[in-house]
Length: 128
Image 1: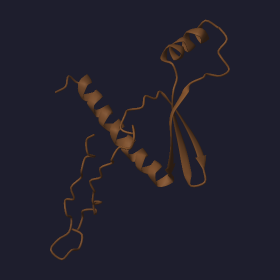
Image 2 (image 1 turned 60 degrees about the horizontal axis):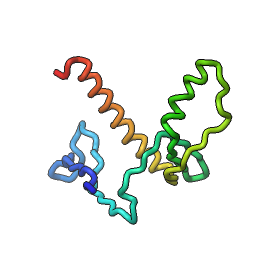
Image 3 (image 1 turned 120 degrees about the vertical axis):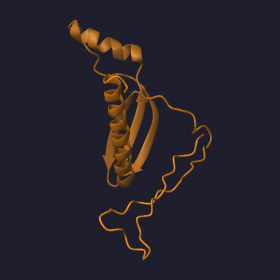
Image 4 (image 1 turned 180 degrees about the horizontal axis):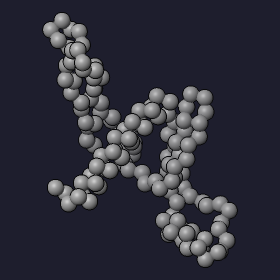
């Protein structure tokens, strides 16, 4: 399992230890390696998520719904057929997170989506 990418501090401090003027202080990154336990390093496939909020925690349920069934739903709806009242799937994993971890995850996802969007835009312009 690869280590998490490490961020290097650029050192915005001058010789006196005070922050350089005009430049915001960058947070210092720390390299963290998570050691797998049992089969925790094995990927889990999920195509469905649900959030449940409680005081101080957010529970994120990752589930798996059969792709064939998901593909059939729009067809049934378009043909005027009766949609099922309930879909049965499998709970892949439940993750409990504090609000601070949810905010951090939101920032990470924002960066990933911005990068994917930029890459797609570059691809549309001919990759140049």
